[in-house]
Amino acid sequence: SQQGEEDPQALSIQEGENATMNCSYKTSINNLQWYRQNSGRGLVHLILIRSNEREKHSGRLRVTLDTSKKSSSLLITASRAADTASYFCATSVMNYGGATNKLIFGTGTLLAVQP
Amino acid sequence: KAGVTQTPRYLIKTRGQQVTLSCSPISGHRSVSWYQQTPGQGLQFLFEYFSETQRNKGNFPGRFSGRQFSNSRSEMNVSTLELGDSALYLCASSMLRDTSYNEQFFGPGTRLTVL
Image (cartoon, rainbow over all chains, first blue to last red; front, side, top):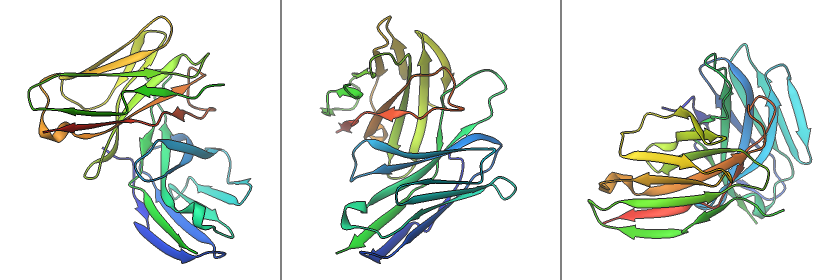
C-alpha cells in the first residue's frame, strides 16, 4: 500500500515558470525523499529532508516538510524542458522492529515543461 | 563509481513460467531493496536485504522471492508468472544499514512483460 498521495497528479507549465508539487503521508517518518523518474526509467534521488528539518534547498529545488500536517512540498524554480518527468515523494517510516531501508512511495506527479 | 546495474533490461515471458532478475549494487553498498512499479499500483516495496539477510518483506504472494549473495549482489525470482506481474522491477542499493540518514540509488529497472 502507498503511504500517501501527491498533488497534483499532472502539471503542465511553461519553461521559466515555477512548479510546485505536494505530498501527504500517513505515519510518522524518519525522513522524506523526493525522486525523479524519466519515462519508465530508474529513479533519480533529488533531495532528502529529515523529520526534524523544515526546509531544505538544493540548486533549483526547495523542499519543505510539515510533520504536524504530515505533508511536504517540492518547488522547482525556473523550470526547464529537461525537468519534464514524474516526481515521487518517498517516506522512510519509523520501524520499531529494527533498522530498515524500506521506502514507501507516493502516487507521483507528472510534470510537463513546455519549451 | 559504477551505478546500480540490473539485468536483463527487458524480458518477455508467458504465463506459468518463472523468471529471475539480477541486481548488482554500487560497490560497498550492503543493502539492496526491490520495488515493483505498475500503472495501477504505483511503486510497491517487495523486499529488502542487508548482508545476505532479508530484513523486510512487502505484501506480495510467496511466488515472489529473493536472495542476496556474499558480494551483495541480489536476485529476485517470480514463479508461476501471471499477467499482473507485468511491471518495471527496480532495485535500489544503499550504503548504510538504516535509511534514516541516507539516500538510495536506483538501477534502470527490468521491464517484465508477461504474455
